[in-house]
Every structure is written in structure tokens, then in C-alpha cells.
Image 1 (cartoon, rainbow over the protein chains, first blue to last red):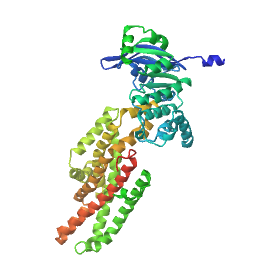
Image 2: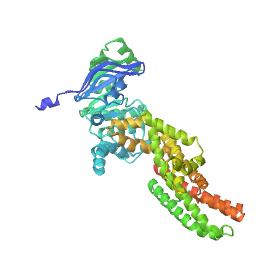
Image 3: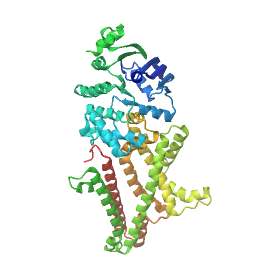
Image 4: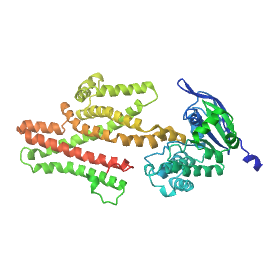
Length: 251
Length: 260
């Protein structure tokens, strides 16, 4: 029995998802399944639709047609369901998006205090644990503007974890960072992956994909052009477009 | 000004609180002592000190009440202007368009003289009519100041709050509004100071406020320089105190330490 509960099961399912911005179709019949405990890295040229898929999963960008389900429940406009789903799905943004008028601690405790009605002292304790996990415990009372980019992103990860989500979505989490800060963020993400967190990561960090991913997905012009374990994906690129893309990002 | 008085070691909150309290105390003191202070002055100020001080009190009271009305109206109209429903946006747009496009004096006269004719039985006393007109007026300007603030909050803030699973109410109250309000504060303060001075137009419908008092004394004593100077200095005193309060509020929101 214990073995079956640890078995990966389908958690987020996308079926023939389409999305257009005006005349430009960014997602074309995208179908895929993300399993529990799986770390998926999505790569592809900018504008290929990878971020849009991520944003469609928690409905920051509603899809036009097709279906997305989280744990069997449709992602749709019903507010109560949507808010429940968003609690289960943590998201980390390229631009961190920390709340500038709140201290680090308040950023992390806001959602549990408002949604779960966790008392402030308890929420603070839990937040401090999370901040320790991302190495930011000494900065709990600072404001976002006092932190470096890498520090802000680590706080953003702690904030997303505060609702104890089952999946974490990372939308180019290191793209806005100076090179020397990329590592500290990736280290935190590595730790999460090792802890068994289900993760979907849009990134250009090929080293991270190679090392941490269970599966690498290549987006090209709104479609999943290739989907393979990292070993296979990188050592034996499936087609010329992937080869060309890998050649570009490695320089 | 007041903010600079407090000890170095005090936190932002402490300074802000101290300034707020000090400014409010000063305001009450100034109003209650104004009569006595003016009574030491020679004719025509001294004998009319009581009238001046009552006028100043009416002016401040008129400003505070219509300022509060205007803040509520302004917030509502700013929200309506950014609402999803076209009809609501349109209504707010019409309100702002009509108020900003007509003179305040006409609005005051309209509420006092025309409204009772339009709506029989709605005979507002002069003070109430002035509050309605001034409140409606400053509300329209506040709406645009607040809308500018709402639009200036980056979209990523709303998205991050939504992504956490926060409901619409919390997204707005906890994340968007505090940041929008901070951005809107300087123009809101300008509107409030303008309101304090524009409240003098209530003179036209017979509200006995500061300007009205000054003009009456001036024409009774034939001493325009002394009386009107006293009126002007009293306005200056009131606006100075009001800006102290608003500076304290602004300082409280200034988590980035940009106001030194």
C-alpha cells in the first residue's frame, strides 16, 4: 500500500489547450500530463508559449479552448474553486513581485493569515521556518527594496510555499537576476526538488535541467515539440530546431 | 517641519505618530486660542476677534466634513472608473466630467438654490448645501488622483496576490489599495488644501466662514488691509497645520525612506 501512495499519479492534465493573443496563437492544442513528485523543465525560445502554459494552469491567463484539470478538477472561472486551486499551486515569477509595502515576514504570512485565518504568531513561526529554509531568516523584518534580486526571489519562493502547495510553478525564476545570484536561487529550487515537490519550471538554465529535471519539454511555436528525460534530451537532440536552440543558449 | 523635531533614534512609525498627534493638538490649540490671540490686536481685529475665530472654526469644520465626504466619493468613483461593467464606468465618467467641467461656485449655488426646486422638500441649510457641493467637487478630483494611483500599481502585484489564492477583496485591500493610496497621497493632499481655500466660496450662500467674516468686518470698518491680512494669515495657518498632518501620513507609508 505504501508503495502505491508514493507512485506518481497524474496531477495536472492539459488537453488540447489553445490560447491566442489577438491574431497570434501562442498555444496550439497543447496536451500533456504532469505527475506528482515530478520535476518538469520547460525550455524554448521566447514567445514559444511556455510561460503562457504556466500562467494558464493557475488561470492568470485564461485559455480559450481545451481543458486543464488540477487533481481532477477543471480550471475554470468559478472563483471559489479557482482560489482553492491557486492555494494548491504556488507560483514564482520572473520579476519576484514581492509586495513592496510589506516586510519580508508580512509578505510570507499574508496568504495564510487571510485565507486560512492562521493567528499572526503562528503564521510568523511558520514563516520563519520557511525563511530559514531559503536562508533568509536574518532579513525577516526588511522590506523588499532593501534586498538583492536573489534574496527577493528566495523570499518569493518562501511566500509561495506558505500555503503548502502541492505544485510549484516557476516562471523564469532566474532570468532577471545577476549571474552571481542565480546559484542561490537554483540551490533553493534543488532543495525543493529533492524534498519531493512537484515542480514545473520554465527556465533557460540548462545545467539545472540536466541535473534536477525528470523530464525536459521543448516548446516551439505554441506546441510541445519534444518531451524526454534530460539524459536523452541533451545527449541526443531529437531534431535540428532543438539542436539550434541548445547551441544558442549554451553560448 | 514637525517631522524633523523628533529624536534620531525614533522609528518611522513613532515619528509619524508623534507628528500626527502634535499637529492635531496644535490645530485644536490654534483654533481655541485664536480668539484670545487676536483680541490683543488693535482695532479692527481685537474687537472682532471672536467673529474671526468662529469663522476659522466654520471653515475648518466645513473642510473636514466635505473632505471626508470627498474621500469616500472619490474612492467610490475611482473604483467605478476602473470597474468591469461599462455602465458603472460610464456613470463615474459622467460624474467626473460634469463636476470638473463646471465652476465650483455654480455647483454651490445650484445645490443651495436649484436643488430644492428640482426635488421639492429638499431644503438644505446653507452649511449642509456647502458640504454637499464641496464634497461632490473634491470627490471628482480625488477620484482621478486615486485612479492614477490604482493604475500605477504594477500588474505583477495583483497577479502575485491572485496566485497565492487571495480573494478579490483581499487582493484589493491588502495589496493594491495601500500601494495606490501611497502614490495618490500627494495629489490628494493638494486637493484637500485646495478644498480648504475653496470653502471660502460657501460665502456666496451665506455660510459664515472665515472669508465671509473678513469681508463683513472689512466693509463695516473700512479697514481692508488689516482685516484681509488677518484672513489670509489665518488660512495660511490652517493649511500649514493640514500639511503637517498629511506629511505625517505620507511618512508612515514611506517604507523605502525616500522622504528625508
